[in-house]
Amino acid sequence: MDNEQFLSFSASGFSLPQEEVVELKKSSKSLIIGLPKEILLEEKRIGLSPDAASLLINNGHQIIMERGAGNSCSFTDQEYSEAGVKIVENPEEIFSSDIILKVSPPTLGEINMMKNGKTLISALQLKIQKKEFFKKLMDKKATAIAYDYIQDEDGIFPVVRSMSEIAGNSSILIAAECLNSFNGGRGILLGSIAGVSATNVVVLGAGTVGEFATRSALALGASVKVFDNSLHKLRRIQDRLGVIIDNSMLHPKVLEKAIKRADVIIGAVRVKDRRTPCIISEEMIKLMKPLSVIVDVSIDRGGCFETSEITSHSNPTFIKHDVIHYCVPNIPSRMARTASFSLSNIFSALLMKIGKHGGVQNTIINNPKIGNGVYIINGNLINKGIGEWYNLPYKSLE
Figure (cartoon, rainbow, N blue to C red):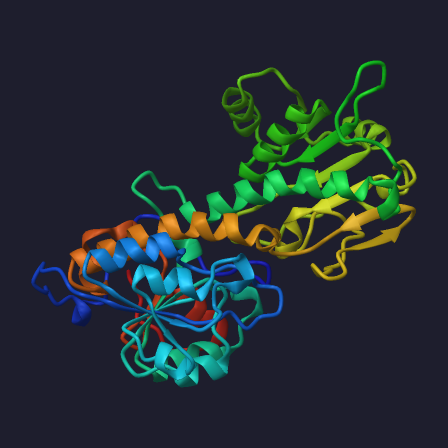
């Protein structure tokens, strides 16, 4: 298997191994949903807001939350308690719930706290997982759903899209701060005012991140040029923005000219199931203006600048070749409250469906697109890519 390629969840929908296809009654079921506190240092989001929790509780479900789980996104325990959520001190009680809803993947210690036969809904972040992660979930007879691979009825990945919208908007705000004189920047305003030349912004990638970065930059009055290797995406971004924007395919000479003029470059390139290709070489970085800014939103998939190195929210930037680099993965966690509201909209609808259909199995049978995110069911690994990559037994969907 190519080292740059990872699993491909079924694009044509989901089918269970034959022995798992057991038609259950399509009766609604009251769910017990657990919300543990996120223990990764830079994960500030939570899967359900108090309002979303109230909606689920009013529809007959129970929610148990670890004390303080919402503090990092400014949701208090009192707000959750008033919504009907049971607040507990012991995380083991959370991990005994029917469904454990986490934003980040669980640690091995958290998996150990899970009771057998429970369902985990979390991000997968496949590139950082070890074989032991999957083995422990299989040993627990768990059903595991990667929410970032779930599709809606239109074939869109709703979580990926909503977080990309936040990341795109945020990238321009981040660049504006990096240009600030008191942050060591060039001291220029990202935008334009009368009598002063507009800031030059280059956006690499015309997907969702690129679209929302472009939208924000244009709203501030910046001069924006968008690059992508897809003519379809370049046409689509113009249609969605409703304005004619300067754009180009990734021709080296055109790109080099734009880079020399750029005050800000946003790296928004995403390639499905593969590492982000390096678009900007180190030699091209050397051509940029002193104290210009790079925001590499693609860093969680390897980055599209040769000089990119992963940084953190607590120490987000470094300077190389006199260019400021911002290379923090998980940008939406900066806007934890907004991101949590967005996630809540998606997860509350998903959990309502699971309750309506009487459980996870019936839900994925009746909603094949949701099944795209399932990689373990009742302890059986059902994803061929994971099985082959980690040398684990799997039951093929084919």
